[in-house]
Image (cartoon, rainbow, N blue to C red):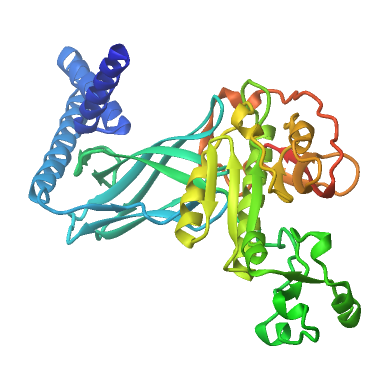
Amino acid sequence: MQGRLSKFVWLEKIRNAIDYYPLTVTGSLLLAAAFYLLYTAANGGNPFALLFSVISLVVILMLALDGRLQALRSGKLHILWDSAAPLYARMSGIEQRLFTGELSVHYFYRLHFSLRGYLDAGRSSRLYLYAEAASNTGGEIHLPLYFPVCGALHVRGQLFIRDVFGLTKTRLSGPQIRTLSVRPPFFSERSPMKLHSIFSSDTARKKQSSEDEKYYMREYIPGDRLKDINWKASIRVSELITKISPISQEESQLLNVAFRHFTQPGKDTVVSIMHLNYAKSWLLSFINAVKKEHPDYRFRIQTGAGVFFIETEQDMEKFAQTVSVLPFMSEPASFHETDVNIHEIFVFSTSYDSGLGAFMGLWPSARFNVFRTTRGGSGKTRKVRFFGEGMGVLPGPWIFRPDKPKKTPPAAVRGSLIEEKLSVRLV
């Protein structure tokens, strides 16, 4: 641990030294060429080489000095990096904003806000980011970003003054290191599941028997038991009607959800990462659709990182940040804890989940609504490109890992099964 800390300190010192170095790569090459021409002129008496070397050295020196003076003049300004806006994968228009206040630069200079870091897309799977935006007026700088997948984003942001020739740079602010969550996008083209609307109070009053007066009346929704269906009322209105007591109504408003981001130990591939991202989008879209239609519904969501309860928008916000960074993992023993009161479970899984059948066997009398991704084959297949609208980030060598998962036999589902076939490509 001490060795890792020392290594981190040394790396930070090297980065700070690079930040204070006043020349860019282009400026460093020009400086090297100027010294070479100066050496050539001194040995060969070439007046043109001497002239070009002196002009180059003077230009580099003046630009670097002017940049440093501007940085000293603006040293007391308050610079704010606004990273509160949520980041979403596979969406255009995502950006980070930097507020520089009343900061102006000289004619041949620009303000440059840069972000560099990496996105943890999966197990041993990183995407590297370098993005930069420029402004000559200050005030507010917008830095557009694009991410192909979700995950934990570790970035280092800084503000520089650079000349328009790209020769010098001067640091205006110290490095700000942040860890942000890149979230999976919601499905926009369709709702994950069609849910019935609850009867209004006016409709509920249309109960004709004294026995019915003891119960609430509403349309049948997934999760209701068959014995609670009012068959007489259902035949009368040609719709399934459920009668429930005040206590059972409260219980039926709690939906049990299992997010199975489980697979065999190993390293992720492009295909496995896209499957997990799709399952995350499916899960969040389902919760969002249900909450819009039934704001009083609550969720108990079981994941490999623990159990989460969602009741308010704040709960939804926290869970979205948490699920964004959940990787594939081995199924923990805690996921097999049973609850005899569960009558219906909504399961979100992938084709990499080999333990789905055993999990459903824990509740032999429960109904399961399974949402599962599968590999593309015959029939309707959704084609997904990893780099959909552009690169945005650069992958490492892991991008070429072959995807050879173990075959998982299809499990018999007591309830409903909705599968999405994915055919994943790089570009």
